[in-house]
Image (cartoon, rainbow, N blue to C red; front, side, top):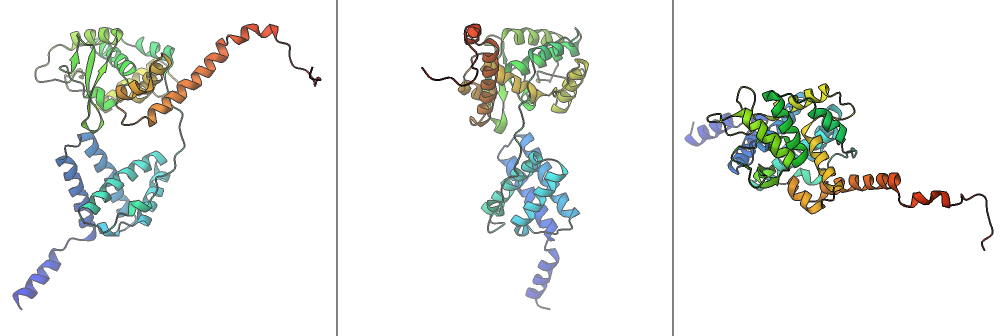
Length: 327
């Protein structure tokens, strides 16, 4: 057997299966994200969503090379995800697959990107949940004088005052707090840093919490657990959820995002402008800010109906009754 024939046979034996080729493509995409210094949360998001796609392929017994990921396959997967979870979650998968296949096209793993022919899943527009002032007061009333109580009060006021995302709040550091300026240094999406101001009530709650937190050697995170570990998003959600139950909240989720919505709408109701709000929240565009504006505008209509200056003269207006000749 010639050396050339042996080499060809060895190449055939070492050729990866379609499944292995797709896994390697996903792994290459993830490594590229890490090399670009994407945030750990973003990399984790891609791994989670693409992992769901790979498991769906296994369940459907579809052994695909990267080039076999056609528009029809992607549509079938998105339809299955929508039925299994929700349209919003299916669109998370859409975003991850779009990023993966764009990368594979750029790196010439595939000849064309099938996502160009796949549309996002249509979603229903949900109402924005916000807390009432009474609900926030009920939550604050659950804060005891213990370490956990001081931390909960500081978390609630920081969220409702600054509108931070869960990951942003957990990423706050002691060094990032400017007590003189009254600002927080926040690491937002896409590793974009911004400075967010806080008010006097938040300042006092943070000072009270930090005095109980003390100086933990080697721990720079602002918010920590009772064991001194950095507070993570899962623990934050648990803490807030339990506080909501103790406060007897109904009809609204006690989550960081509800506080973010409450902050945004309250800011606009109090006279703040949309462009400043966009910067405070770290939005890349005005799309979400417009939704907050719509909600605050609806509030203006409701308030006008309640306090209409013209309605003070209602008794002076004759009720229209029947048809009359114009004079």
